[in-house]
Length: 240
Image 1 (cartoon, helix red, strand yellow):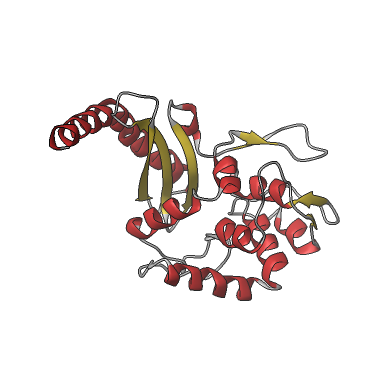
Image 2 (cartoon, rainbow, N blue to C red):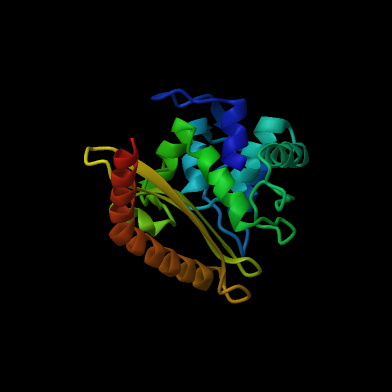
């Protein structure tokens, strides 16, 4: 939702990197925050909006999420109000945001609401391109920042986003392309959401669990769904 609101307010055209944004002292200090996922940004460093979206979404950098919130709305509190307004507009009645990063235990949602968000988010070309990346780089850093969504290594998987914490467990919304069953080159985009895997353990254990369970869903759909869609397409032709 953070990425969606930022891109709604500051759209990125294809091939456009967007405005340069200065990393503030708070985001740099939070890079060393224990117990949460962050990215090693430096105070005064200037990075494009597209690069910051990559750094936020791929390794789940909470400090960059809060940086973008402050840049977009002036404060995290004002940005969270925009997040909740957008959730209400989309009909996400089981969702309440209390921070831009989602790390707070008071931020809550449902699988149904996250499916709504996934479909809306993937309509934005810049966001869609970002969540399909397996890694990104930061200037001055040799080691790439890797996408925590390792399902991207599987055929057809094109996104979306992981999230993990001690209270929330492992969570993942994913998107994959499958043949549309019409016999041509058409593809259909399929979404899934898995929440609350191995909650009250560790974020790493929750993440491993949600990737495993989501991988089972993906594998089953890859095997079964094309045949189901082909059968439905055949029935539609017969009724036409």
